[in-house]
Image 1 (cartoon, one colour):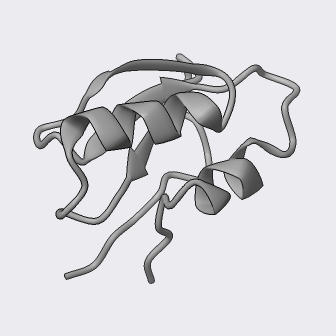
Image 2 (cartoon, rainbow, N blue to C red; image 1 turned 180 degrees about the vertical axis):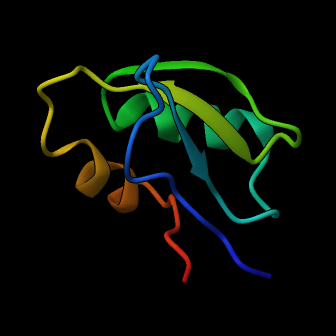
Length: 73
């Protein structure tokens, strides 16, 4: 499985945070919210959370990775 975390927000400023498939929806949403910004909704599966970081928040992705979001290659 390849897990990807968007590192460049789309024009709306939203990004997808991808957690392990074993994460519950509650865990994924809570972890995304803990990274800062605003957790908006789930993606197509409950372990993907769409979030909107603050536009000038340069540490958002580091915090997201610290909460368990993965960045694949």
